[in-house]
Length: 120
Image (cartoon, rainbow, N blue to C red; front, side, top):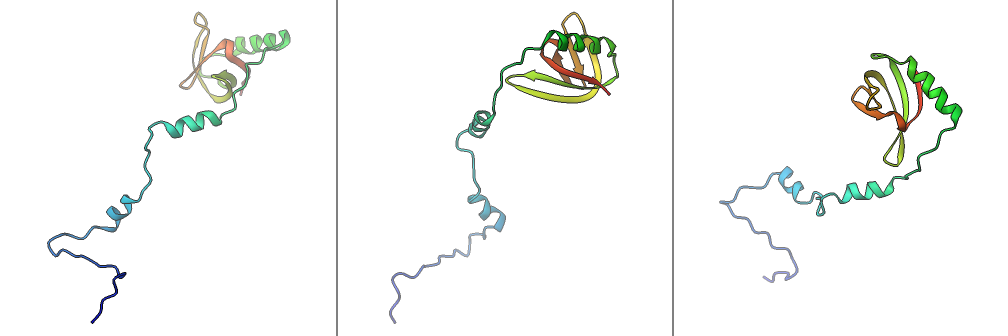
């Protein structure tokens, strides 16, 4: 009887337990060889913008709106942060005039970075 020399040989050891499907699948799961690589790629994909200078009229409108805000008001703020404009809506948790900070829920925003503010 001649055996095909290209046929796959299956070895089975009766003392060795069979590997579960889940463990076998984990062998072929992707892994991150370089820690932080994915975050670095995402960081490069962002489009960064320059901070816009506000006109005197816009600054005056912001100042008037800010004077009407008090703690527990619901507001929407558009502000500049690290090369992008972000928008947050929520309850005013804290207003610190000396350090020029307003806190909306857990987000602390410097008053100089505010582009637009609206009281709901």
